[in-house]
Length: 617
Image (cartoon, rainbow, N blue to C red; front, side):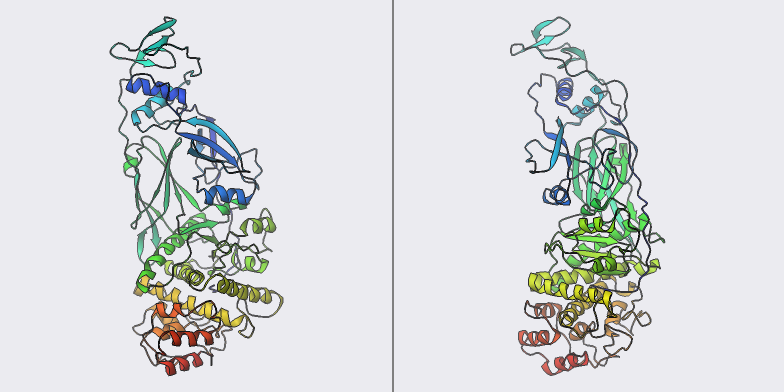
């Protein structure tokens, strides 16, 4: 957990609803597709089978939505896929479903899909999605659609007539009212629905191309950076492709599209999903933050203009929310890359990361791993600090929100600050690195150790609400204090260490202990490391001075004679430091002895003296 100063501002709901028009005729229905194949390829296609099912689900509980969103990992859409879109918005709520309930979720699944038990669903259509773009174009033409495929160009052809049986090699001609041999004159093709030869299409379709684009995020310190491993979903009707950006933010589809393609960005991959609370629809916290990039056609499909998430000076804006999501998403990928050189434990996969600007402790984070640990409690005091204050007018009800959040928070980051410069990129990234460094201790020390560490902090948070104890860690004199000191000391060190590796001299000025003047450098030492070196374990105004935030850096650097402590220890490694945090090691003193025993008592006298200066005999 990391804390700093805060503001207390409610984020207005600025998301806009999607507005739908009329339902469109479905060109992917089997009868229509059989006609399209015949017109394009000739022959009869009466045995053409469905490739997919167009379905919708009506989950009634968050657990059911989690099954669809996470367990089955479906690409869900809250608006139907066969309607005109008049206004492209951020969400769609079925008018028949109350706004505080989960709306219908639409999807395209394989024909052999096993529907999960207990979740209401409807199969809306069996569809055939062709790989031949010419067939797809002809199917849309036959359904009465224009070249864009989403605006009516005329009445859809009737495709429900009964087909009389004929012997092999014959077909029924409705003009002649009898079975006739297969085949049509030159320039004509057989229409398997109308049962007669019709003029062949004379205008070849434009070629289908790969969807290619680039997604960036503005880094206030480093400039525009590619957004890594971001899920990109391209959709045209029921043809849906999932892609991920590469290390430079580029994505390319393997499927081919033409005309209008809707592209949606989702902050989700196997490492983490980034979520937020949006208005009264608390159930949306189950889903990752998404951004509709737009609809693209023609040459744009193969060259979608690069899109960059940028920070808005208004921290309560939707634009800033998306920028924080993008910055957090990239930080997860960067953390995993940076620790390779250190050899330290990685965070668990599948983290649920919640971003919020409704809590009372702005610019802070926490890593309770409620989802990973399948922990069902959610203390009001914790929610007030990091997510949303119970005294604020949260539309839809505080308790309803908490119900959806249970088991859904592994990491939370609250960017509710009064000054947007307090969420410069490196400061956001350092906070996320800090919280991920906590989660790596779950991997390293195990569930029992991590549960004890989280429970200790929550006990102090609860205590702070009923006493004068400093929030959120207490005074350092309770049974909860030793494991908090170890947990927070490590995360404070490693978050700053990796932020320095990422930003170096491009870092912002970093506040020291939240009570001193910002530290931009310390001679030749860069800001994030300088913040650790300047830590003063005797600072009177710091109620958390007992948390040894600078200790771990002092164990690895070779910079003796620092300002606040006499550091005579050097050249321990981060791998050695984290390896000494085992399941039974729950205090700085036990940690000190384990560190020495695992490393041949390296510099034992100096190590013990260093711990003594931090208050641990």
